[in-house]
Image 1 (cartoon, helix red, strand yellow):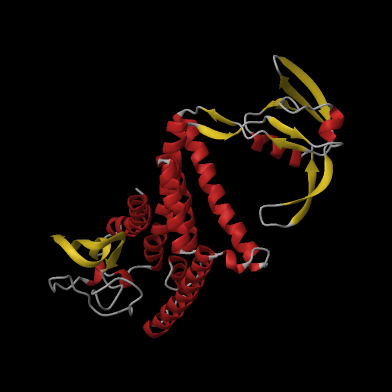
Image 2 (cartoon, rainbow, N blue to C red; image 1 turned 45 degrees about the vertical axis):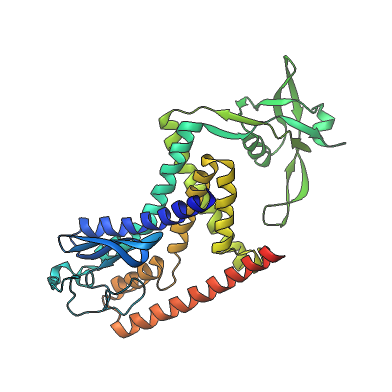
Amino acid sequence: MGVIAVVIVLGGLIFFHELGHFLVARMLGIGVKAFALGFGPKIFSFRGGRTEYRLCAIPLGGYVMLAGEVADDAAPGPEALTDGPDRTADGEVFPRELLFNARPVWQRMCVVAAGPLFNFLLAWGIYWVLFASQGQMGLAPTIGQVLPESPAAVAGVKAGDTVLKINGRSITFWDELTDQVQASKGLLALEVRRGDAHVPLNVTPELRQRKNIFGETITAPMLGIVAAREIVTLELTPGESFKLSAKETGRAIYNMVLALIKMIERVVPADSIGGPILIVQLINREAQEGIVGVLALAAALSANLGFVNLLPIPVLDGGHLALFTLEGVTRRRLSVRASNAAMRLGLAILAALMIFATYNDLRRLFK
C-alpha cells in the first residue's frame, strides 16, 4: 500500500501540474507536441490532432512539450530554446501562429503560471473533499493540566474544564482558544464546562517566554494551561467546507513562505531541508494510517509544489515568469543564448539543492 500511495501521490501531483500547462496552452491555441503520463520509454501512444499522447514506463508524473518551446522533442526538460520551426512526431511543421515562443508575453506567462495554479486548485479540492466528508477535526478546548501559580490556576481554572466561550465568543477548537489568548490585551472572561455546570471565570494572561515552531524564544500572553489531547469533530456544510479548504490551502502556502524566510535568516538550519526520501517516508507512514492521512498530506504537498515552482529560479516556472516579466518591462526578448545560459544555471542550482536534500535524507535515515 505504501508503494502504491507513493506512486499515486507523487505521480498525481506532478501530472496535475503538467495538466495545467496543457489545458491553458490548448485554450490559447498554442500547439502541443506531446502530453505524457509518466517518464522514460514510451509504452503506448496515440495521436490526437497534432499532439501525441504518451503512456511512459515510469509512473511518476508527466510532461508537456509545447511547439516552439524546445529544439529537440526526444525528452522533456530544460533543452535549448528555439526560434525556428518546430515539428510534430510525424514531421509535420507547426504553423508559426501555434508556436509558444511566437505568442505575446502575457500568453506565455499564463501557460507557465497554470502549473502552480493547478497545484493550488488541487490542494483546495482535496481539502474540500476531506472537510465535506470528514468534517473539521482538531484538539478540543479541554484542559488537561493547569500549571502551578499560573494565571489560570490563580483564576480557579481546573484540569478537565472545557472552555466554551471567551469574551462571549463561542469556541470549538483549542487553536481558537490559543488565538484568543495570543491576541488578548488584558482580562479575559471565560465560560467553562465543569461536569454538568457552566462556570464563569475571569483570567488575565501573563507575558511569558516560550519556543515557537522554529525554536525561537518569543514573549507572548499565556494562561499556563495544557491541552487534554481530546479530538473533536465539527460537521460542515459543502459551502463551509469550500471556504475552509481555501483557508487551509492559504495556510499551507503561508507556512512555506515563512519557513523559507526563516531559512534565509538562519533560524531554521539548512540540515532540516528534506528531499525525495523524506517525502516517500511521509507518504508511506500516512498510508499505514489510512486514506484520510494520505489525502491530507497530498493536499499539503500539492500546495508546497505549487509554491516551490514559483520560486524565481531558471528552469522552474517562477524563473520563466521572472524572465517573461523582464521581457514585458523592457519590451525586449532575451536572446536564445542568454535564455539557455539561464536554464543551465537554474538546472545547476536545482541539482545542487537536490543533492544536498538527499544527503540530509540519507543522514537522517542512517542516524
